[in-house]
Amino acid sequence: MDLQNLWFGLIAVLWSGYFLLEGFDFGVGMLLPFLPRDDDERGAMFASIGPVWDGNEVWLVTAGGATFAAFPAWYATMFSGLYIALLAVLVFLIIRVISFEWRTKSERPGWRRVWLWANAVGSFGAAFIWGVGLANLLYGIPINSSGDFDGSFWDLFNAYTVFAGLAVVSIFAFHGASFLTLRTQGDLLDRAGRAARRLSLVAAALGTVFLIWTVVVAGDRNDKGVFPPVLPAVIGIAALGLAVVFAHRRSQIWAFAMTGLGTIAVVVTLFTSLFPRVMVSSTDFANSLTVSSSASAHYTLAVMSIVALIFVPLVLVYQGWTYHVFRQRVGGPQREQTY
Image (cartoon, rainbow, N blue to C red; front, top):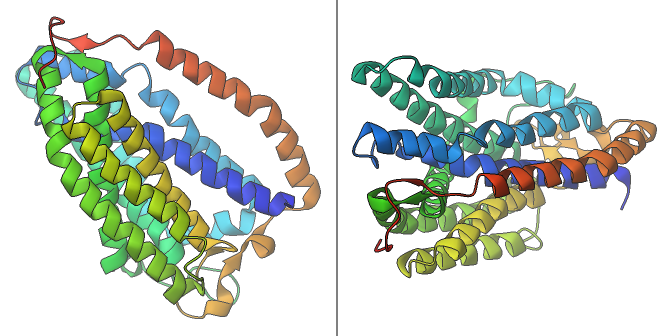
């Protein structure tokens, strides 16, 4: 495997890590207005992701930085074509970040309610736009012969990309509910379990349709065969199906593991469907950006590989240690789990 293909795969890994980790805290955020019954439970839900949400966003920053360094042409065209969408994501993320800090600045119920909903809206909006944006890489956006975006913001929305956004939102919500069954206790745990069971069927259905649709789009829009995109798609469908089973059997760890695997499979299916292109042109297929045409020089990729080999394991160890330290349940008094 040459370094260009290696870095395309590594960027897919970074996006998978981001969706896996940020996915569940987006899901928790989306559930904030609906699960807790009082301010103590709302505080417990914030506390369940409080120590880790900002660390999860490191995966996004790293994915963006790696794309800029390894594939500058891809980065430039993507940010010009998805500029308004990415700006909207940034606004949603800022609103969400502020909600963690400002919610505790006052005890007034109205004030706290505003920032609770701000977190929920920011989580939903960011998740939806990420789904739309990544799906557009495969479905295609207007790219001219110079490799520049040649369309409008509304070109990003069609049946497939909007459905992708809704599928990502539903999977994240299920992923978040499954996470809460591992981090909460008492009545909040009961409601998190019920929410996971209710969301499981919707997430599995939308996720299954999206994965099948992605394989079809890969053939129609990117000149791909069924193989290999069908492999991660089948794994994702199986994982989401098993997550439904485990959620109904109240197997907390396995349900969360399967929602995580299903989330990763969504990203891997998209990137497998893309390769060897990184962005498909909807106006002229010949204008599509490929891995080789958008990559940096070999020396740049070699230096990046050395840096990644040194620092990525350290980041993984540190983040794993963080999750270990903050593994205790939060919420009401510990009791027998009946959810």
